[in-house]
Image (cartoon, rainbow, N blue to C red):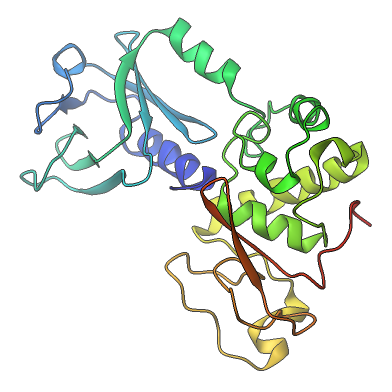
Length: 269
């Protein structure tokens, strides 16, 4: 499932490509009622966590959640290929949506309800990290599970949760109620930093310079996410810092990666 930085990049791309102009809106697949939006002016794209909102001059909002297999592609206008749920185009460029979990027209009130139900988003200037901490400190669930809870930190997924916990040497099994406010603030600030970098560069890089390929004389990591990471998808490989074998276990249906030697703390230093 795409993490929040991907959704923010898509929102910006919609705005940059179509913002302020009249657009054609269709559903080649036929599973979305595009007629009320066709010929309207596209206003903007906006992201909140993993939710993408498209605003039109009709006052309608299209709410998209890509889920596990959804994809959006921006390409020069051409006949549709495959099952395109939603196409927005301006006569030159098209944005085709395929395989989303959700693609629906909602009202402004419904949009507000989705935003209210979401936790603070590290990529938004209006985020209030205290809201996430309030949920965290009342829970007996592990910090690793809670970082994947979209009501605690909207947009954070498996990669960012594994990497931010490693970067601050936190034991992923520590209950949320044992995480103090300072530790949460440190985690939050680092998520803001890492996720903004991912938006700007289109890739996730979490490894500090002293642990990078050049400093350690090793080959760069090859992965579809394109970046250097400490633990994510490195199960069985040596830790870049201590050399111990990176561990992997299933937690609430998702793979969790960590270093048993480096990650023993309950608090950020």
